[in-house]
Length: 265
Image 1 (cartoon, helix red, strand yellow):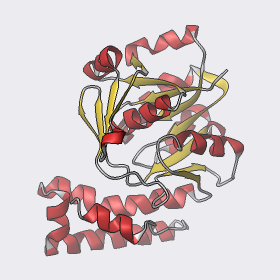
Image 2 (cartoon, one colour; image 1 turned 135 degrees about the vertical axis):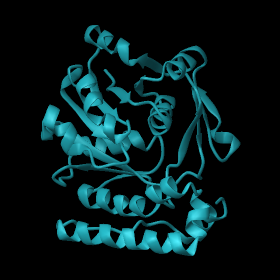
Image 3 (tube, rainbow, N blue to C red; image 1 turned 180 degrees about the vertical axis):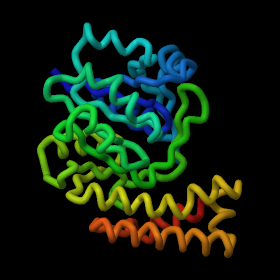
Image 4 (cartoon, rainbow, N blue to C red; image 1 turned 120 degrees about the vertical axis):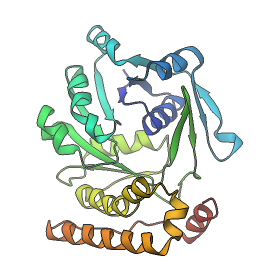
Protein backbone atom coordinates (compact mmCIF):
# COMPACT_ATOMS: atom_id res chain seq x y z
CA UNK A 1 0.00 0.00 0.00
CA UNK A 2 1.37 3.43 -0.91
CA UNK A 3 2.23 5.93 1.78
CA UNK A 4 -0.52 8.38 2.65
CA UNK A 5 0.64 11.99 2.64
CA UNK A 6 -1.23 14.87 4.26
CA UNK A 7 -0.51 18.56 3.69
CA UNK A 8 -1.75 20.63 6.63
CA UNK A 9 -1.94 24.21 5.45
CA UNK A 10 -2.50 24.04 1.71
CA UNK A 11 -1.44 27.58 0.96
CA UNK A 12 1.03 28.42 -1.78
CA UNK A 13 3.89 26.12 -0.71
CA UNK A 14 1.62 23.36 0.59
CA UNK A 15 -0.60 23.28 -2.49
CA UNK A 16 2.29 23.48 -4.95
CA UNK A 17 4.26 20.76 -3.19
CA UNK A 18 1.26 18.50 -2.65
CA UNK A 19 0.00 19.06 -6.16
CA UNK A 20 3.30 18.13 -7.77
CA UNK A 21 3.57 15.00 -5.61
CA UNK A 22 0.01 14.04 -6.59
CA UNK A 23 0.89 14.50 -10.27
CA UNK A 24 3.68 11.97 -9.72
CA UNK A 25 1.13 9.43 -8.47
CA UNK A 26 1.49 9.81 -4.71
CA UNK A 27 -1.51 9.59 -2.36
CA UNK A 28 -1.87 13.20 -1.22
CA UNK A 29 -4.60 14.94 0.79
CA UNK A 30 -4.64 18.73 1.11
CA UNK A 31 -6.10 20.06 4.38
CA UNK A 32 -6.81 23.78 4.65
CA UNK A 33 -8.99 26.26 6.60
CA UNK A 34 -9.87 28.40 3.53
CA UNK A 35 -13.26 27.01 2.42
CA UNK A 36 -13.21 28.59 -1.04
CA UNK A 37 -9.82 27.05 -1.82
CA UNK A 38 -10.86 23.56 -0.73
CA UNK A 39 -14.10 23.76 -2.71
CA UNK A 40 -12.31 25.00 -5.83
CA UNK A 41 -9.84 22.09 -5.68
CA UNK A 42 -12.69 19.64 -5.20
CA UNK A 43 -14.74 21.05 -8.05
CA UNK A 44 -12.11 21.89 -10.66
CA UNK A 45 -8.82 20.36 -9.50
CA UNK A 46 -5.70 22.22 -8.42
CA UNK A 47 -4.41 24.44 -11.22
CA UNK A 48 -0.62 24.72 -11.26
CA UNK A 49 1.39 27.11 -13.41
CA UNK A 50 4.91 28.48 -13.64
CA UNK A 51 7.41 30.23 -15.87
CA UNK A 52 6.87 27.95 -18.88
CA UNK A 53 3.77 26.55 -20.63
CA UNK A 54 4.85 23.01 -19.72
CA UNK A 55 4.38 23.84 -16.04
CA UNK A 56 0.66 24.58 -16.53
CA UNK A 57 -1.23 21.50 -15.37
CA UNK A 58 -4.37 20.62 -13.46
CA UNK A 59 -4.22 17.85 -10.88
CA UNK A 60 -7.21 16.25 -9.20
CA UNK A 61 -6.06 15.84 -5.62
CA UNK A 62 -8.06 15.08 -2.48
CA UNK A 63 -8.88 18.15 -0.39
CA UNK A 64 -10.40 18.46 3.08
CA UNK A 65 -11.76 21.27 5.20
CA UNK A 66 -10.22 21.20 8.66
CA UNK A 67 -13.67 20.26 10.01
CA UNK A 68 -13.59 17.09 7.90
CA UNK A 69 -10.30 15.73 9.21
CA UNK A 70 -12.01 13.40 11.69
CA UNK A 71 -13.01 11.30 8.65
CA UNK A 72 -9.42 10.02 8.54
CA UNK A 73 -10.23 7.95 11.66
CA UNK A 74 -12.23 5.63 9.35
CA UNK A 75 -9.60 5.66 6.60
CA UNK A 76 -5.95 4.73 6.08
CA UNK A 77 -3.87 6.65 8.64
CA UNK A 78 -1.36 9.30 7.61
CA UNK A 79 2.22 8.13 7.11
CA UNK A 80 3.82 11.51 6.37
CA UNK A 81 2.24 14.82 7.40
CA UNK A 82 3.75 18.03 6.07
CA UNK A 83 2.99 21.06 8.24
CA UNK A 84 2.97 23.99 5.79
CA UNK A 85 1.18 26.63 7.86
CA UNK A 86 2.53 29.99 8.94
CA UNK A 87 4.57 29.62 12.13
CA UNK A 88 1.92 30.82 14.60
CA UNK A 89 -0.45 28.08 13.37
CA UNK A 90 2.07 25.29 14.00
CA UNK A 91 0.66 23.98 17.27
CA UNK A 92 -2.99 23.67 16.27
CA UNK A 93 -1.96 22.08 12.96
CA UNK A 94 0.16 19.52 14.82
CA UNK A 95 -2.59 18.70 17.28
CA UNK A 96 -5.10 18.42 14.45
CA UNK A 97 -3.18 15.69 12.61
CA UNK A 98 -1.26 13.85 15.34
CA UNK A 99 -4.12 11.52 16.31
CA UNK A 100 -4.42 10.32 12.71
CA UNK A 101 -0.76 9.40 12.24
CA UNK A 102 0.18 5.79 11.54
CA UNK A 103 2.16 4.10 14.36
CA UNK A 104 5.39 4.91 12.53
CA UNK A 105 4.07 8.10 10.97
CA UNK A 106 6.12 11.30 10.99
CA UNK A 107 5.54 15.03 10.75
CA UNK A 108 7.71 17.22 8.53
CA UNK A 109 7.92 20.96 9.13
CA UNK A 110 7.91 22.45 5.62
CA UNK A 111 7.69 26.01 6.90
CA UNK A 112 9.47 29.31 6.70
CA UNK A 113 10.45 29.26 10.36
CA UNK A 114 12.08 27.22 13.11
CA UNK A 115 9.18 25.12 14.38
CA UNK A 116 10.49 21.57 14.78
CA UNK A 117 10.77 21.79 18.57
CA UNK A 118 7.19 23.11 18.87
CA UNK A 119 5.95 20.11 16.88
CA UNK A 120 8.11 17.70 18.89
CA UNK A 121 6.55 18.96 22.12
CA UNK A 122 3.29 17.30 21.00
CA UNK A 123 4.45 14.15 19.17
CA UNK A 124 8.00 13.52 20.37
CA UNK A 125 11.33 14.36 18.79
CA UNK A 126 11.59 10.93 17.19
CA UNK A 127 8.56 11.66 14.96
CA UNK A 128 9.70 15.03 13.59
CA UNK A 129 11.83 16.06 10.63
CA UNK A 130 12.40 19.45 9.06
CA UNK A 131 12.50 20.61 5.46
CA UNK A 132 13.79 23.94 4.17
CA UNK A 133 12.38 25.23 0.89
CA UNK A 134 14.87 27.55 -0.78
CA UNK A 135 13.93 29.80 -3.69
CA UNK A 136 10.59 28.17 -4.42
CA UNK A 137 8.62 31.47 -4.69
CA UNK A 138 5.03 30.34 -5.20
CA UNK A 139 1.78 32.28 -4.97
CA UNK A 140 -1.78 31.14 -4.26
CA UNK A 141 -3.30 33.84 -6.45
CA UNK A 142 -6.89 32.55 -6.44
CA UNK A 143 -8.79 29.63 -4.88
CA UNK A 144 -7.43 26.45 -6.42
CA UNK A 145 -4.72 28.27 -8.42
CA UNK A 146 -1.00 28.28 -7.60
CA UNK A 147 1.78 29.83 -9.67
CA UNK A 148 5.53 29.46 -9.33
CA UNK A 149 7.23 32.80 -9.89
CA UNK A 150 10.82 31.63 -10.44
CA UNK A 151 12.36 28.93 -12.63
CA UNK A 152 12.70 25.41 -11.27
CA UNK A 153 15.93 24.80 -9.40
CA UNK A 154 16.85 21.45 -10.90
CA UNK A 155 20.57 20.83 -11.13
CA UNK A 156 21.35 24.54 -10.75
CA UNK A 157 19.97 24.99 -7.27
CA UNK A 158 18.78 22.49 -4.64
CA UNK A 159 15.34 23.62 -3.48
CA UNK A 160 14.44 21.19 -0.68
CA UNK A 161 16.78 20.32 2.20
CA UNK A 162 15.38 17.55 4.43
CA UNK A 163 16.93 16.76 7.80
CA UNK A 164 16.61 14.89 11.06
CA UNK A 165 16.78 17.07 14.16
CA UNK A 166 19.97 15.31 15.31
CA UNK A 167 21.60 15.41 11.87
CA UNK A 168 21.54 11.66 11.21
CA UNK A 169 21.24 10.38 7.65
CA UNK A 170 18.24 8.06 7.91
CA UNK A 171 16.19 6.06 5.40
CA UNK A 172 13.07 8.08 6.24
CA UNK A 173 14.85 11.37 5.55
CA UNK A 174 15.94 10.02 2.16
CA UNK A 175 12.40 8.75 1.52
CA UNK A 176 10.98 12.23 2.11
CA UNK A 177 13.66 13.81 -0.09
CA UNK A 178 12.76 11.29 -2.78
CA UNK A 179 9.09 12.28 -2.56
CA UNK A 180 10.01 15.94 -2.90
CA UNK A 181 12.05 15.27 -6.03
CA UNK A 182 8.70 14.98 -7.77
CA UNK A 183 8.40 18.72 -7.04
CA UNK A 184 11.99 19.92 -7.56
CA UNK A 185 15.54 19.07 -6.54
CA UNK A 186 15.94 17.75 -2.98
CA UNK A 187 18.71 16.51 -0.72
CA UNK A 188 19.22 15.27 2.85
CA UNK A 189 21.15 17.69 5.07
CA UNK A 190 23.11 16.79 8.22
CA UNK A 191 22.86 20.43 9.31
CA UNK A 192 19.14 21.20 9.53
CA UNK A 193 19.42 23.65 12.42
CA UNK A 194 22.34 25.53 10.89
CA UNK A 195 20.60 25.80 7.53
CA UNK A 196 17.37 26.90 9.22
CA UNK A 197 19.21 29.71 10.96
CA UNK A 198 21.02 30.67 7.77
CA UNK A 199 17.68 31.17 6.04
CA UNK A 200 16.51 33.17 9.06
CA UNK A 201 19.48 35.50 8.53
CA UNK A 202 18.34 36.21 4.97
CA UNK A 203 14.72 36.68 6.03
CA UNK A 204 15.75 39.07 8.81
CA UNK A 205 17.40 41.28 6.22
CA UNK A 206 14.37 41.45 3.95
CA UNK A 207 10.89 40.51 5.15
CA UNK A 208 10.53 42.83 8.13
CA UNK A 209 11.95 45.76 6.21
CA UNK A 210 9.42 45.31 3.42
CA UNK A 211 6.64 45.11 6.02
CA UNK A 212 7.59 48.35 7.82
CA UNK A 213 8.49 50.38 4.71
CA UNK A 214 5.83 49.12 2.32
CA UNK A 215 8.53 48.69 -0.31
CA UNK A 216 8.65 45.91 -2.87
CA UNK A 217 11.67 43.65 -2.76
CA UNK A 218 13.33 45.48 -5.64
CA UNK A 219 12.70 48.91 -4.11
CA UNK A 220 14.04 47.77 -0.75
CA UNK A 221 17.22 46.29 -2.23
CA UNK A 222 17.97 49.40 -4.31
CA UNK A 223 17.51 51.92 -1.48
CA UNK A 224 20.93 52.60 0.08
CA UNK A 225 19.64 53.43 3.59
CA UNK A 226 17.30 50.45 3.80
CA UNK A 227 19.97 48.16 2.35
CA UNK A 228 22.45 49.33 5.01
CA UNK A 229 19.90 48.56 7.74
CA UNK A 230 19.30 45.11 6.26
CA UNK A 231 23.01 44.36 6.33
CA UNK A 232 23.20 45.37 9.99
CA UNK A 233 20.23 43.13 10.82
CA UNK A 234 21.82 40.23 8.99
CA UNK A 235 25.10 40.79 10.80
CA UNK A 236 23.38 40.58 14.18
CA UNK A 237 21.54 37.40 13.16
CA UNK A 238 24.82 35.80 12.07
CA UNK A 239 26.49 36.64 15.39
CA UNK A 240 23.60 35.19 17.40
CA UNK A 241 23.68 31.98 15.34
CA UNK A 242 27.41 31.65 15.85
CA UNK A 243 27.01 32.23 19.59
CA UNK A 244 24.49 29.37 19.65
CA UNK A 245 27.13 27.11 18.13
CA UNK A 246 25.34 26.66 14.81
CA UNK A 247 27.17 26.00 11.56
CA UNK A 248 25.88 28.64 9.17
CA UNK A 249 25.99 28.18 5.41
CA UNK A 250 25.96 30.42 2.36
CA UNK A 251 23.18 29.74 -0.11
CA UNK A 252 24.57 28.00 -3.17
CA UNK A 253 23.35 28.66 -6.70
CA UNK A 254 24.94 28.93 -10.09
CA UNK A 255 25.88 32.31 -11.57
CA UNK A 256 23.53 31.56 -14.46
CA UNK A 257 20.62 30.99 -12.08
CA UNK A 258 21.42 34.13 -10.08
CA UNK A 259 21.44 36.26 -13.24
CA UNK A 260 18.17 34.73 -14.41
CA UNK A 261 16.46 35.49 -11.10
CA UNK A 262 17.78 39.05 -10.98
CA UNK A 263 16.52 39.71 -14.49
CA UNK A 264 12.99 38.95 -13.28
CA UNK A 265 13.00 41.46 -10.40
